[in-house]
Amino acid sequence: MPAVVIVGAQWGDEGKGKATDLLGDRLDYVVRYNGGNNAGHTVVIGSEKYALHLLPTGILTPTLVPVIGNGVVVDLGVLFEEIDLLTARGVDTSRLLVSANAHLITPYHTAIDKVVERFLGEAKLGTTGRGIGPAYADKMSRVGVRVQDLFDENILRQKVDSALKSKNQLLTKVYNRKAIDSEAVVQELLSYAPRLAPLVADTALLLHNALRDGRTVLLEGGQATMLDVDHGTYPFVTSSNPTTGGACAGSGIAPREITRAIGVLKAYTTRVGEGPFPTELHDAWGDRLRENGGEFGTTTGRPRRCGWFDAVIARYAARINGLTDFFLTKLDVLSGIESIPVCVGYRVGATTYDEMPVSQSDFHHAVPVYEELPGWSEDISTVTDFDDLPKNAQSYVKALEDMSGTPISAVGVGPGRTQTLVLRDLV
Ligand code: GDP
Ligand code: IMO
Ligand code: MG
Image (cartoon, rainbow, N blue to C red):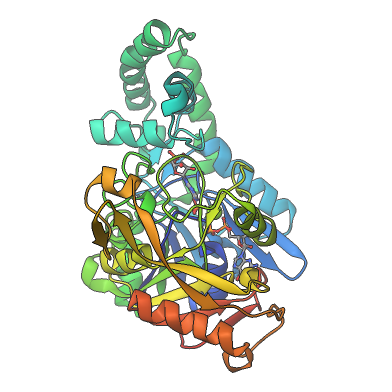
């Protein structure tokens, strides 16, 4: 025991990397359980800044074991590039383990992701173009290639050949692209095998034994609740289950082992890519949040869409994930705003909602109902104790806690490791 999940409560980029890093020295294992290198988790330690995409954030803590779970889709080129970059910066990556059952993102997945987005034109999803959707589609269609396939050349060749048969038809006949050479893909994948072999493990068994022996395991989610393929704003979602249910499936840890579920929640809201976003601001307030919050994508560099805090979404995330705590981030970004609107419900025509509307059309047309909370003018980025925050900043946190029905156990006042006010132990 215990197994703790960190999950994004909004549309991603809430600060999951920072939250995971903060808990680092209390953990024995940090496991990524979903997504792939569509994630971008930023950690700031002193003057050093790290952006992790595929590797668990825990890799920056030398005492723990970072694990890429079975639920992750792995682009091996990216994996080794990220390892090399960190190694060059003096980070010891030698403890990393990768599940034998994780699926691989191959060059044809990335090609299809990009070509489909181009083909969709105006109707595009705004994916990260990393091959995530096509790799998960193959997993579900049972034509995916897994880590363990790399160690049996015949099986690998059969799987790639068979997958490319239909995909090349699609690429050449529907999308007017060149066919992808199956043997070249096989050779590229095989070239990674010697380096990958020592990292491969039965990670589900390893984690089971670790929990039995009293070790602490943190499950680090990529993406977020509103990007979940089942519970998010479908079809404007990613292709995995970032929510806590996905943490079990994507790691092999049983639900009853999860003792704590921490939702990382931004003090306002952002979204990258297409899709509905009720509190989005298209005016100078949106620009201000983007500038002050540095809201530009860690993975693609795209400007993030910005809006006010949405309590309906926070409540929804608490319910879907069974959250025990919120880790509130970026409170500092709201300093200097006289009165801060917070969305407490939606209006759609004559109907008022205080829960997520089940109809996608209603959510698309949702008009936020705002309550105004008094702001504060002080810079709070050097505050180290919650009680030293301006009274209105304390009240803002308490109001969010009341509206979302879940305790806020930590408050971020800056990107740095030390810029967090911890109200309650999280592990
Ligand atoms: P993740 O994907 O959830 O890990 O989040 P990202 O790393 O993509 O984006 C969060 C950004 O906010 C990063 O640049 C962090 O360094 C930064 N950040 C995290 N917590 C805070 C905070 O409390 N205040 C400020 N100003 N920045 C923060
Ligand atoms: P982290 O872990 C924010 C978004 C993309 C797009 C949609 C589908 O850093 O919070 P995909 O490439 O996954 O098929 O794209 O999901 N998206 C993210 N947005 N943070 C992320 O990860 C994201 N990962 C994917 O922008 O809208
Ligand atoms: Mg991110």
